Picture 1 (cartoon, rainbow, N blue to C red):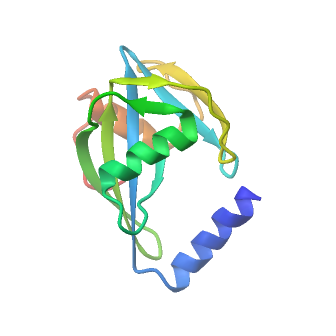
Picture 2: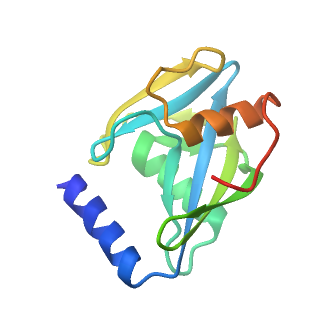
Picture 3: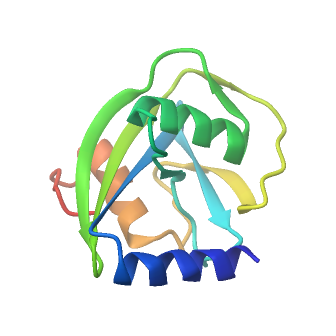
Amino acid sequence: MWKILHYLRNVFCFFFAKKTLGARALIIDNDKVLLVRHTYAAGWYTVGGGIQAGETPTQAIIRELKEEVGIILTHKPQLFSVYHKRHHWDDYIILFICKHFIQEAVNSPEIAEQKWFPLKKLPPDVSPATKRRILEYQNQLELTEEW
């Protein structure tokens, strides 16, 4: 079901959307990062999603973290960078760093699996953009504006 909705979103954006705006987070606990495997896409990704009408980027990432992985922030998320990705439309991604939180059990229909990985030992099937964001966070790669 989520694969179909993801596909339909992409078709809609191809024909009608000129810009989309999303919020994502690197959730850091000491030397580990929380990544998710979606039900509609292969590989490991950062947590996040679209910013809804009337919602600020901070409100969006707080909502997404709670819905997808049961993360409740105890401090305001830190803005890391803003990125651009060109599909057949312009997609802007706002990335936050989240280090202060509690985590509750949650069952999200979008998330097949969530797992903590050492920052220095990412899974082989981590998405290229996720890997670049983690390397930028560790100052091992120069910060770019391109997702």
